[in-house]
Image 1: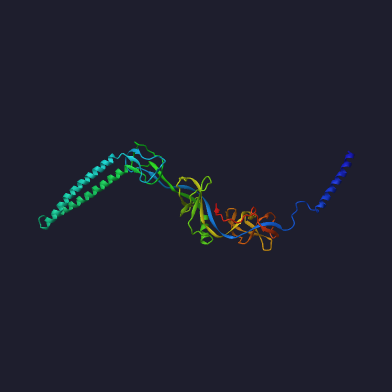
Image 2 (image 1 turned 45 degrees about the vertical axis):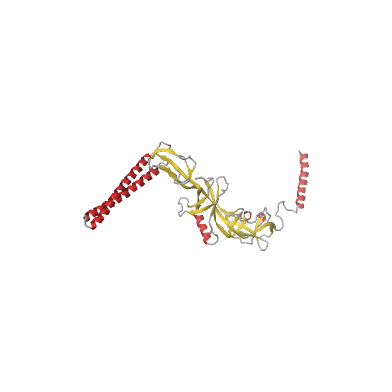
Length: 394
């Protein structure tokens, strides 16, 4: 054991000496120390440009027109004249009710009208004769007045019988139940032989117009107020029409472009949101009522927007946005900035940066406030030039 300890002692001394020589060769500094000289950084030059602003809002589709078909006459359904699930046009006959009772009523009303008209002719001739006779005192004035009264009664009776004929004709027409609107018809709730009554609660079928189609979206009242204040302050041009694009449930963009129809005048107290309604062409019936979609609404154009690449924007411990720019003296300058939304790979900056600033987007991990930097234009991979893609607010 003594021999082994004597042998190990020289080895430890030799190892310590070798470590000392290695430390001296490195200049007495541990590995991984900070580099010498200014940090190398890449920058992009900011500029002001016109940027269209959009808002991506959730919504659902709803039918442009919808009509429940109900009978306006009593009777037995004799036939159904449409194919369920097909397209129908306004005025197309859908059901035929047994019309025999209504045809008989029309014939009776027409006969009564003819009788009233014949009576009117007789009474009119008598009144004309009495007019001539009263002039020569051949009849009394009382008889003439009675003849005139009979004439007026006959005229009124003819008018009443004409109205009865018109009513009978309307009831006969109601025996043919027609489509009130054009659109896609649903299933029938009755079959031939069923008894229906005028004004019944249950609809015979439903017609839905799908082209065009509504898209109802919601926007918070706070965002709406912010948008109006931006337009009023002149920071946003909202004078043009508001086209709307649609993103479907599967992530695809709908081929047709819609237009904003109106904005509701009340705020939903439970959600604090306002409903906006857009109208979209739907020639191929791709959109069906009740589908969930996202509407991309054009809010306007920011005429002098500053876009900063997201790689050049950081957050401090308080959560505020910050950015480094290359100062005129070649030193890194820390800026407190305000951003409102994203525009593709960029932030829309509302304060803290100005056109011409050299925003550092590469080498930020080596930058310290007030420290000199060796700046060069950023490479394409490190920092993209601000793009003009529409800004979306989610």
